[in-house]
Length: 165
Image 1 (cartoon, rainbow, N blue to C red):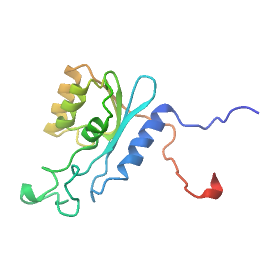
Image 2 (cartoon, rainbow, N blue to C red; image 1 turned 60 degrees about the vertical axis):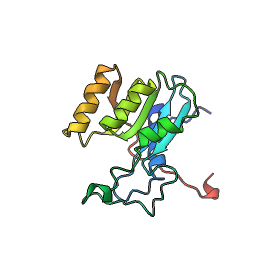
Image 3 (tube, rainbow, N blue to C red; image 1 turned 90 degrees about the horizontal axis):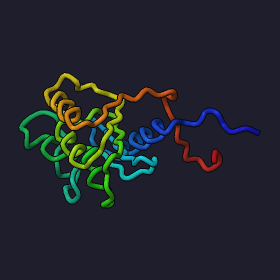
Image 4 (cartoon, helix red, strand yellow; image 1 turned 135 degrees about the horizontal axis):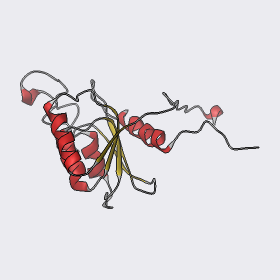
């Protein structure tokens, strides 16, 4: 008997973990997850977009428009920053971060400062915004590799039913 041939790649595995992490986000509009991996393909940390610890997601706003203090934007911690902060104190030097949505300029600063050297992403839908333009400018200046992920498997299924294990 030979080995199974339809297994997923490392890139698909780590992006899958980032996408699974995004499912923890309570944001009604945008769910983003991140997975940080070292050079030995070991997961260093994961994160998703949400409010900081101690800030109730029932008491803070999830709105996207209106008075700024009544929107989510000044309060939400992005997936990339959460993953960096969730790390257990190990160095993130030369790691990769997998994230579905290209990082904003604020997350780019944290990525650079933490020593992460590659950003792997699925979507760059905000490419023309000033924040994303600034993000790319900083990441490229700092020598961080940017790679849009191309996958063989377009979807992955997770089945929790015991009889399928």
